[in-house]
Length: 316
Image (cartoon, rainbow, N blue to C red; front, side, top):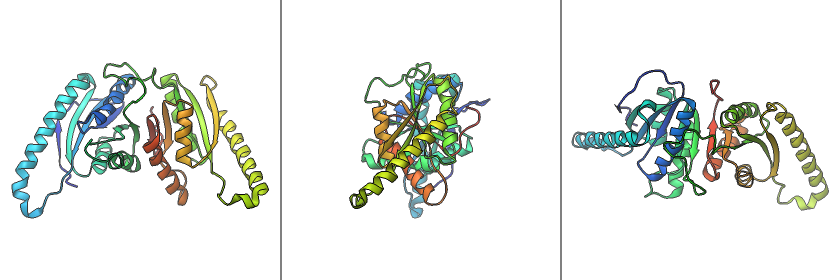
């Protein structure tokens, strides 16, 4: 990746909530701004717009391509500045940036350099590519970013937030928190509690029990007994975890049996969830791989925005 960047319209000063929004000038990517701007307004944050250019340069033609690169970068910067003026109030705009490189890597590195608190990114990218490829950038950002990532997709049910919307409180009333009872579960619940207070929302703690083996019919009584005991134990743990939530926040416990990402997505639909809060990794070893892939699969299939994190923030 080429590491140089072009920074336009900088605004310095205190940034209590630094929000980075990658945009590709498509309607889908701009949709992320419809969430980022009201959220920044609600939290007293500042927004940075980032556009990443990606192309391969053959070393033998470097000299002749450089001028074209500079022209394209300048044009992208001008387009980004126009978009910022149209969508982000001047007092909330931190800066606009154009970088060259692999999108997910440039986004993650920029977020780290700027000490970003939150990345807001659409789950689809350029409209000329397939949906699977479009989704891959957001999923890779979720995998590699060191800060929280809010992934959003075009709103198919109801009107999306507007750039003048004062906050997201009226749109985020139900927060779903999938838990696996690992050491990542409590930070997820604490983060959800902070958000519930900000949004005046209710919380549901969800545990997905692994499905029964396909060949379990041969040992049906034993399998059913183990399955029933696993569900009972999980429900007890859910109730115990729910007891740590302050009483003023309405909290439910939900239990389902399915493949993890599918159970989370289907429960989000049934419960009419507005936001899913999910850590990007659980324990270590194989558990780390499973939970990591689960988070990315949830981002891909969830019917609502998903907030993922590696380490829960302390100042939200």
